[in-house]
Length: 246
Image 1 (tube, rainbow, N blue to C red):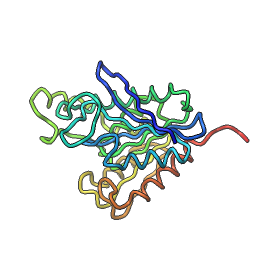
Image 2 (image 1 turned 60 degrees about the horizontal axis):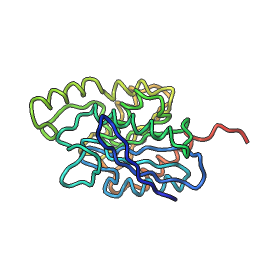
Image 3 (image 1 turned 60 degrees about the vertical axis):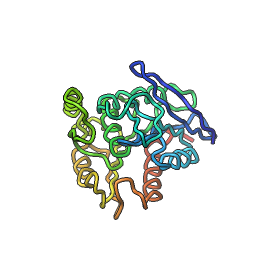
């Protein structure tokens, strides 16, 4: 496995990322999208996921959203989390999808997106607006999003955030993913985003769609990483399999 750093520009601001490459290329790609307060490593979870995906023959791409920096995380992209709106993250996801599709090592007809929490929200909403995403996986994703004091710092920011929440609604956008496949995964003990959000997304989406509930798992699947990655890898491998004959 070979890892390479990359930097993209979106609206004059830098997006920093890392891609893990498999031995055989061109290959299908998977773009990993972190959650609110997270970064491209997701406390090591995305590092492990990237290595596993590359070992399975995927180009694994993970990146820091703009407007994601906090004093606690390791985000290398421009912008502070206190200025973030969902619209900016959806815009970033589309830029990274275009980047992935243009890589010579990537089969542009086999790109999947995987997002955790707010990253799952973003994966759904960006895939609804970009046909470059050929398969979509949402882990612990909210069906709808409403601004809270946790991420609002002023009246002007609140208004921008509200407008974005009205424009980007996973419960509606998931209908636009079909005929591309959609997988929703949630932990039954998630205290941040109740697993019933996943059930709502599954019911709202059109076929082909799948729902997988991880019994006893929390929001980030702390003690269930093996099960989470195993299910996701297997699903992606089946949905992004090469269409070439013999």
